[in-house]
Length: 161
Image (cartoon, rainbow, N blue to C red; front, side):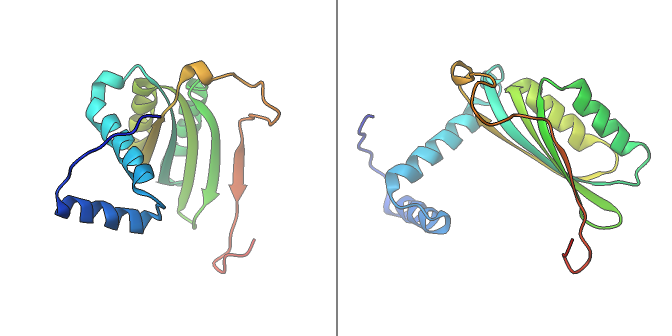
């Protein structure tokens, strides 16, 4: 690990300290590392499209929209190399939330997420991408399972199951 010395103005330092307080950072080094990673990811833009990433795609959709659940399921199956697992939650009579874990090249993950979010009947969508080093991707060799899951959570208005 390298040590760096930087000079920043007082106003910017106050913003960093406020950011640290909001997020619960214990020290400036950790905060600056995370801010730098985020800034580099944003600045890289299209240049990093071939890099590998893991992502969460979260979206709320109208489950009564014509053929939408079927289309969304088919999209996930058509991209089974990207879609690792999906959690399905019934929010109310009209709405469902799905959270899908995606893994692959950034451009493919982003294109898949953008396509799902753009589907008619998807009300809200968000994708969070995090870079990973494919050299450390050692497949399914660890002790815990990596199964594709489709979980349903049914709740009443009181929140009880």
